Length: 458
Image 1 (cartoon, rainbow, N blue to C red):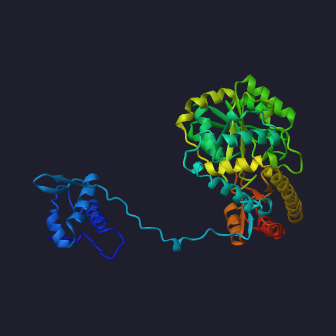
Image 2: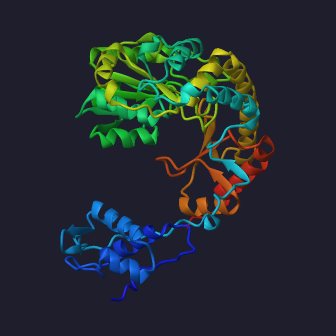
Image 3: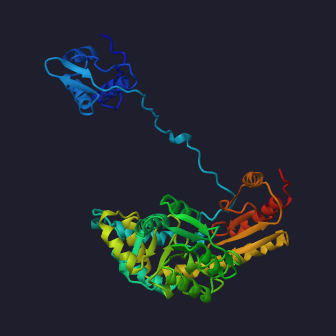
């Protein structure tokens, strides 16, 4: 009998029984060996291939366990599986062929932070201290987040954002998205969400995946208008009080109180996405909405830009009525954030280093924002409208003419310029100054202005 479907390489690092196993399995999957076909006996195959009986037995036993073949006593081994569709086979990725991500000379994408604001070696020290505690690494993390971090966050959020809560009401997650998934599961189904049209794109995806109806509220210079909420009648209101679409400024306390009053009267929940609320550097951070209402407001905070983008730790503060629901299902959930990084962050906060870090970040970003605004005003002059988003560390540039967005984006890439992703408005370009070096800002803005203002329509 010919066994040309069995390929053996006795110089390979792969055990012989695995080579025989894969050869027979592949032949069954591609249809070369049909269901019911009888395989050679262990003694015969051992002799013909020049390998031990143990090797053949090991291969046959693994195929039997997986259901590819069947051992019929006093008869032999027969093919048991039949594939109508051949499984796809993929080759091992050759790392040498993987293209590195393009590095842009002028990176206004906001996907990184300024290297001057963080002492990487100092952060590594806190992580290393945790890694040296072996007992920390040999157990699962707490579903709600490590207690040491939740206690630290309670003090931190109270001090920087006036969040009115206890550690028991705080839930930790690896970014805002998994926390929103948890929140939606607690809220229920068939809900209506009101948000700004140019809002957090990922939140729209999450709300939609839960079947929520998404509506866009109107905004004026003070933020969400109460009249638009009366028209929409939402169950949930998603806001970023640090940035109003019309002016890019804080939502004033009068509008915050009006919003809270409306939510209380209409049995609605407020989800406050306080993205980088502690990073205000031109104006002093004002208390969050949750400070005035801890019964109907869910607070979301993050450390992606405050500390490091690679440290994916965010936290959510639940009102008591939702906390009661969460406690019923907590044991069935898993923590998404690294236990090591959670503990390191807690130690970093408790040591007071986070306060020094924030003061430095505010100084650095204040200087960079001034350079950015001066350059945009200099090169764009009156040919564009600007909205400055202090906490998100970017300037929105709105061009007052019809444009070919794809053509412009291609030209930007050709000039090694990277910008933030496109939002809902086709002629708005968001330019972040968080990660770009100060020395690159002026030349980068000059090149962008030349492309945006003088590129002809396609």
